[in-house]
Length: 442
Image (tube, rainbow, N blue to C red):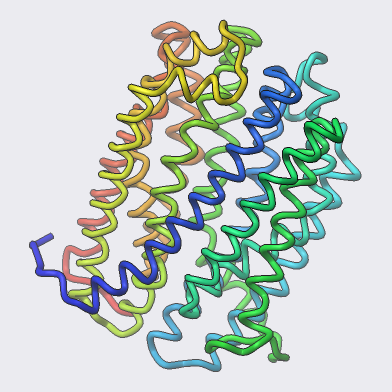
């Protein structure tokens, strides 16, 4: 990619889209961290491990949300770039209808089939009751949680990234207060942490929904003719990101399996603390990719190749540099961050020892996430699907399950970086191949 001078419009777009998206994702990070802090300090380190065991269910639910949301917003961004307002509204409403169904399925799955889900998650007896409690109450809010994720994506694409940041900020402050109230004064344990998150996301939903109800952009709620072909397009465009979102639960399940066999409860508890701490880095690079997605899509729809290449290069720089800064923080502040979650001295010492081994891979993961967003935002779903299948289903499981058998249990802490390196080579290969004759507009 040749070096280009940044124009005023490009700089303003980066500020308008990427900064609010990064702030919104940082607030989501605070959602997770605050829950972890209150659970660790108010319920105990074992409860923190239980939340980690429940995480694959939560992440699979988020993958379903991403399938519908990313598929819809990708189509909307391209159609808005072409000036097709009616087509954009139709894609918006089709995605909204499907996300309602997804929310219902999440609620039914988590509340009516809680015990089977806990068994599938591999929770031991020491964790089972805690995992069941958290999972049930988290799933109660499946519908507003799904709608919130969906409408935030469309609100951002409809030029109202500021409202998304405000909604998420308000919800984060409310979540902090409710976590304190439910976990400490009311002694509601994991149920309190899950309910606090659900209520906060519901409040965020109402704030975001006002953009569409008040018709402050190109998109609004209205009746549209149902098109099965459009449903298929949404699923196809969203499939790459859904596969990418499947990666964390599969990775967590495989890692939990290896850690339980190799280290026992201390391995699970330390990994849980490291996951909470490292989620800040993920907030940075997911924010960059989500903020750039509308810019990729609109530039592609308008056939602005220069803008596309500029935003791709800027996104790689933002993601990689932000991740490096975070990694430096983990190196120097690891002990303080672990104690923040109320981890006992044994868990803290073990987590600090392993933290850098886990977190160096996040720098590479940030670039892979950005390249995936670039592919699916520019109608290169085939490349995005290949990349995310390798990343989320093949490379991660093979490296996590095989390397510890060959090289010993200690290599498990390095597996994120190892498989992300493999994926990075494939990602740049796909990028070069797909643009060997220039960008193709479909």
